Amino acid sequence: MIVAYEKNMSMTKVPMPEQEPDVRNKNFSEVALGYTEEMAKEEARRCLQCKNPLCMQGCPVNVPIPGFIERVAEGDFEGAYNIITSENALPAICGRVCPQENQCEGKCVRGIKGEPVSIGRLERFVADYHMAHASADAPEITKNGKKVAVVGCGPAGITCAGELAKKGYEVTVFEALHKAGGVLSYGIPEFRLPKDLVAREIATVEKLGVKIETNVIIGRSITIDELMEDGYQAVFVGSGAGLPRFLNIPGENLLGVYSANEFLTRVNLMKAYKFPETPTPVKVGKNVAVVGAGNVAMDAARTAKRLGAENVYIVYRRSEEELPARAEEVHHAKEEGIIFKLLNNPCAIHGEDGKVKSMEVIKQELGEPDASGRRSPKPVEGSNYDIEVDTVVIAIGQSPNPLIRQTTPGLDTQKWGGIIVDEDTMKTSKDGVYAGGDTVTGAATVILAMGAGKKAAKAIDEALSK
Image 1 (cartoon, rainbow, N blue to C red):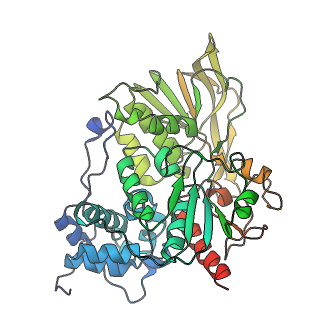
Image 2: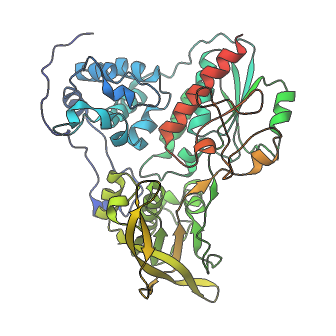
Image 3: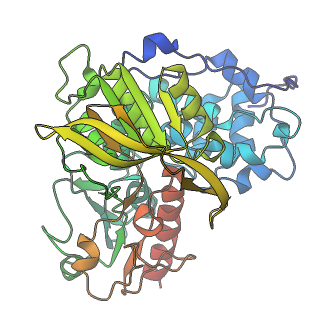
């Protein structure tokens, strides 16, 4: 299908329709409403179809970006979907949560003198269009009789499983929780990533023949060695980074203190996102402090606001220039009334009758850049003060759960717990075992985890095909 069309040389993206801030901060419906067909075609026609598409260099899963965008510009949305899914099994998810500004869009030449092409919004549109219009026929795949086990049903695991299933492997995914999806299901809020959408994307992978077994804790229910004894010829570990880090300050054991991991998991798996239509099983107080300023911190703060908190504070020890969260998430948080207390660092949480009453913070000033390039904060002597809060959410990062490394002899790990792999093949020190995603890198992005899953699947196939 070839359709003649004029290029759109606008310097700015076609705006994304959104709920109004004062409406959306009281519900869990998706903030961004998506492009219409005409909006999508208009935005796609901003693409210059570069002979050397730098955008693809920024994509961890190698989506043929110019190809799918050209199909959108022509109005061939199913053709665009087929191009995307040749490399990416979860386009509706990636279109919503990928940090495109640092990846594909960050390299788009349209961004030199204006705004880059909105690759993420177009990917989301294509995936949503397909879900709304396409049939759900299962593909015919010839099995090769070889079995592979995947640990963890998050983005790394589900991607690795899908890639191997396409090649004919019998793949079983073992998920510790009762719901498939990993961080996609329990970590990212409903207003950024609807859970029914995650379920439908996972169902697409299951149609390839992937089996998913939930409530199986590798290292307790069964070990990796026992999986190998059961006939699995390779194991991919994509168990994520679910072990929260804490501040190690007085008062962290008071009632009303959550890790962000626990807080968001409770909200998602206990369906608190149905509030206010139904009573929420997750309670927050009138005043909430979220410590940290990454994407998870923004998710926690915006969730607390939706659960009825009147004042929600982001408490972060650096300045706005050093905020690690996506600019879009910071923008949305500010629009929704989240209060940013920057250059402040918690030093104690105070309580009354075992419950949180206030958080003591000390003001900071920035010194020289540290190893990450961000300026190191240092306390301003005598600047301590209290913030009145009754809920505190700690969102300063996560590490891999130690269970797998403790129960898998011969598996080399970093001091902080990450599994050591060969970067080209994702192979670990243990024969037949591969790993990728947050369990290797520490908490990172969905798309980087998916890239690791793809890389591991390729290496597993090459090893088992010899």
